[in-house]
Length: 135
Length: 120
Image (cartoon, rainbow over all chains, first blue to last red; front, side):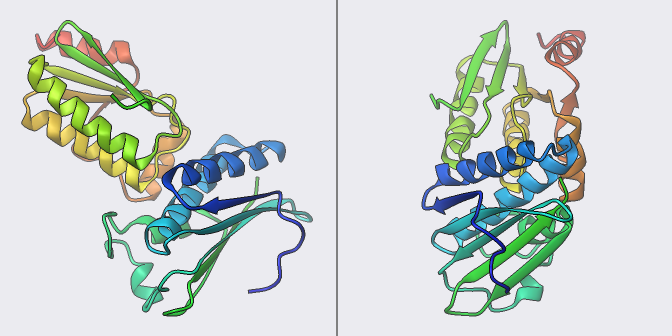
């Protein structure tokens, strides 16, 4: 994935459950600052919650960075973990596929809720997810 | 009792107010507290107010569905109230329309339904 465009507006370490809530709050505030519409904010923050929880539950923790991109104005997050990675990305993106306690709708659901979704993962080298949306 | 939710008892109905930014552990504690109180207080109705929740993701959605199922097995009719329109639209897109859960627009709507059935 390409280099981040600028300094992140926020950076959240995902080490415990409270940090998933902290990630939601940070993204929610960043979108408020852009004058985001309620539905767009709800969709994006929900997707962030799924991705942050995945990094914590499957990746053993990680880092979530929030970026404000200009022309056109949009929000972007990058979430990295150093976990075991995902062996079969297509399978992981399919609704109903779950290796943990979830319903298996998280990853595929997050992709449907955002305008741009990129995922990079290799077994043994962690997972990085980038998501973007208009405010 | 978890800090992320409060359970109030009114007549035979348990009112559960879920606060924003509830964590996974909080919500599992809530599940346990609520099931015990349904039995101990012989509650016939449960109303779960989620108006404070800015978002409901797949984890919280699954817990809400489970709370409804547990309450039903313990013979208490359960309503989820106060869902924000944007949350409803997002849940449908996530493929989680809470099929086993009854919903009502507000607490007073839910109480009216429970009273009509003689459960409150």
